[in-house]
Length: 137
Image (cartoon, rainbow, N blue to C red; front, side):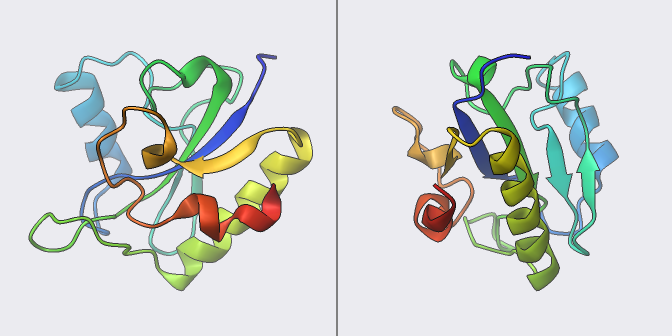
């Protein structure tokens, strides 16, 4: 197993009703990625979908992915494509449950948002994950 130093929370920067298959198709066809951007995606109803085994490297944070488990909720923008925390109560509960499970497997891993990495110039995950999940550190 690779060394996991971070568990990173993302948003898909899509509307909350976006389908996982269409997101994966965008990664494959437009970005030419061989692996998904995230290990886990959380749908609006709170269902957690494992899109890549955690032993493999996903494409969540350029330059850091070898040491990250990437999780994302579907959503993160408003109707005008501006950053907005669109997490449903079910997504919030599922993210917290998943983070607790991952922290039990990787207790030294830091939980933070995509935007908390150096030289990242985006709002992802559209809320302050570092602050919200500081109790898990």
